[in-house]
Image (cartoon, rainbow, N blue to C red; front, side, top):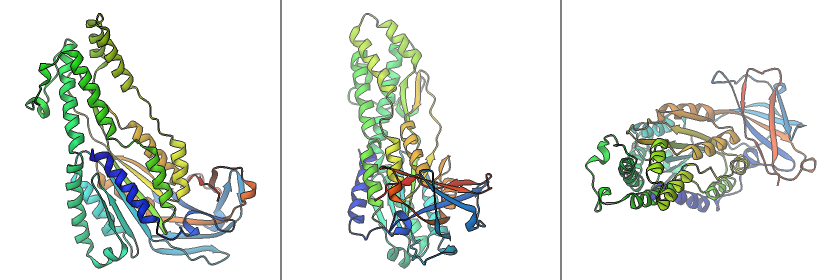
Length: 415
């Protein structure tokens, strides 16, 4: 069950790593003596806008205008002071967290990580790579001592090995599910199309040896096992967000998530089976249970998770790795990653990150890198006494520039 537990291992390791670090500096995640901060990314037609002036910005908290104290333009490790009423010691190094959840290895994943290391890493940056198997942490000292080409090659080998190993259980269940689905199609009065992946694979007790009740029971059990391997525990995300608040510097998460498909009986086949077995209550009951399983809704609280990630000060970039579904007669390869897609999309929007759907991980990392490499840091005076309890919403407006696209975190929880 490594596809899911790898992420859990990552969470616990990150918490243990960050628990001994100093508190996050005020300039990147919170408040100090009534002063708050927001990182702002401004684009026009996908190009970062770097020529804004202090008078262009307006900051509001819960709709209340706030007085801006200082504004800095950060471009990689270069800091330009646009407005500074009082000097602030900035810590703008990046802590990169690359998380990969995939059931198939794509060599462009390794190329994407290499591109990031070779083009965007600066002195003082750290890197944590989380595969389905293990967590790999490269601190600034390690990265500075080793050639980047050597680190890139090592990471490509790590990702390939771990994705293949980590997805072994998941892919095995997926093959079982396809085999069971194809067998069930015949009970609906049709013949499933050929599937080379399972055509010549036979387990100890072949599906041909079972009746419809046994097949439906195995099918449901396999669906549930497959679902348990997926990333659906919101408490782990909340723990992760809390741990990020304790790290210094700019935290950047790049989350690669590969599109998932689940083999299901087509509605037509289910209707035909319900008609054929209308005098068999147990079979009808199993079919109805499958129908309810197919229609389960996302139980994750997206608003809660979005606010927690926003409060952490992290920049969350979500790269959704697309792939085409297989075509098998009588079998519907239904997308089952919609719930995770919705949740990760909210986390990206809540933190000022991007959402990119692509068949090419390298193109996705390029867009993500452009989004995180340049930004404005705006320090302003907050009045906690004027705020109602709970989450404080931040809004940044650019005066007279409606053509510009603005990205920043939703807000924070006042201390």
